[in-house]
Length: 236
Image 1 (cartoon, one colour):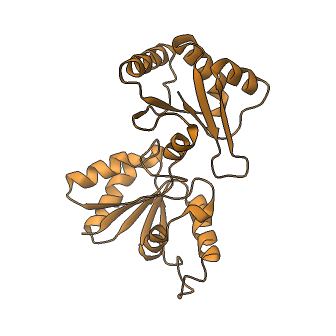
Image 2: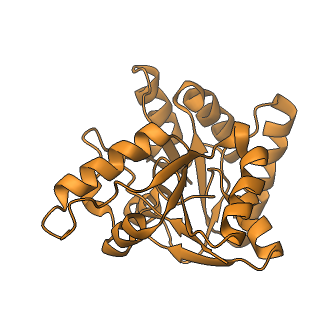
Image 3: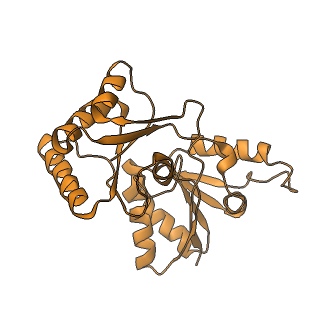
């Protein structure tokens, strides 16, 4: 039986990729990825950047890239399981960061556990952990709450539950949000939590990296004057 490698890739800066991750991606026959084009570019750039490490000029050239994303996940799971059972090793990557953390991967990993297929984590960059450690907020306890629901009633319950959790456990809350919903989410948080201190990170390790620390009201005012772009993480 093959091995499923869960490989973390850079969240922006290529130099953040680990040596072990490079080795696994070089040696693994099949790579399951959200976007084969993006992963193909990553492999090409990694080969060029780290060319001094590679003694074999054909590094990465024998990989088979197969798409694995939310819309085709159910179909791909059984195909990948079959490949693993036939003895092929498979590397699972997302477009950036760690697979299965608000990205596809959980369902495949769960099926592998049911089939007693060996799973190895190749740790590396995570926008969630990177945001937490630069936030200046407590790091001893934290709750990663993912993306808020889209339906209004579910959103209200979501934020109310987070408020109760923070009141009870005093942990740092970590929320993901898309740029077009950022202001709406900040307003809803302020309505339930009050005008508390918050931290917003955007595009960590990239050219336009931004870390804003302020009261929610000031953050709302700041982003209301701009067109939010990139991926946002809100920490409370």
